[in-house]
Length: 72
Image (tube, rainbow, N blue to C red):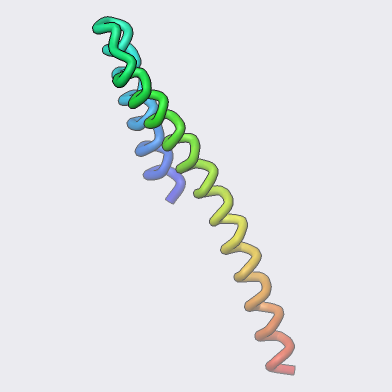
C-alpha cells in the first residue's frame, strides 16, 4: 500500500512544481498559491498515511490482547 501512496505523492509534488514554474513565468500569485496548496496536501497525505498505520497497528495489538484474555 505504501507504493501507490508514494506514487500519488510524487505526482502531487511534480504537479506542484509545475504550477509554481507557471506562476513564475506568468507572474501570477494564484498559481503560486495553488502550487503551495498542492505541496501541502502531498505532505499531509504522507503524514496521515503514517499516523493511520500506527493507529491500525495499535488497534490490532489491542484486539489480540483482548482475544487472549477472552480465550483464557
